[in-house]
Length: 455
Image (cartoon, rainbow, N blue to C red):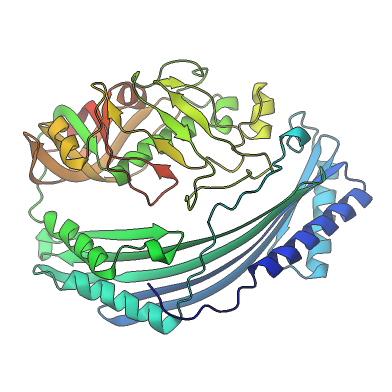
């Protein structure tokens, strides 16, 4: 979306500098008596512009550095970090990490990930797409986005348009001899609009998030989408309390998958704070339902050749025909559980929810509305009412009431409630309307029954 000539790309030189620094500090840690050490270093650069009612509200240029060091003296661990890469700060960070380790208790699970699990191949995942946009061009783009949204009849105000450019360089190294470099870009556009007046006032937004600015939807399309979503909420009403099927729009449905990840992640499991404790190998979703992790998708939002400990990533099933195929583990939680790392230190990499249903057919969004029939379409959730220990789910919500597969009217000021265990088992369909803006690639999800509390 920019025809500005790119500035000189110094990313490879910066990565070389971070790599050299990391290897030097690991050598110095070993010389100080550490039996093992690991370093994570990063440089993040960005431009963030916000425009409201045609005027510039904020312009922010960022260049942040990070350097984190962990040392091990046997089973004793010490960590320290700094945002300053000058030699004195690095030496102070090393001294602090060593001092901390000498005063901590031994932990049998502490230590680097297994040397045999380190990544050895590093294919290009197409994650580096610097966006050569300067401040003036970002401001102009923000104005075009906002103008497109405000041009719609009924839009009375704006909360502003945002244009964000980001570049990230990172290095991870450890005393196994592993050194991994990553560079990635992430850019976003957003717009929030207001329609109606007084108690009728409604607000909504839309955004796009990409690795390459060439993949953005147009300024016009983003403005139109934000305006359409905002206007569709006018004259929203509550509902009487009832039980009904609920269809979660794609951007909300991925949150349901996020709760699953939290419940099957190592920290929750070894603390015995999960409603899916001891569920590996057991059915937790319908027999047709599949979720696969695909860490090496080109331009994927969560792509990476190795995890935060250098362990090689690989394609693997998380849910296979409804069965929980494995947990989500780094090396520490794996040792606590007597298991092996799944290459998920630092989180999951590109989870893809396969579209489908009990009848074997995948549906687009219109088809998912038809499957819903009469029930609630949820487009917004509020609050933190999710308990991963019990699985209880209760959140404020807004969206649309649907009758016979057709949207009837907007809905607000309601609460939706159930237990995640029942919600997962009661999934009727997963849509083909996949939202590509996240590392969780998920379409809309239809749940057979929830309690909707309103008036």
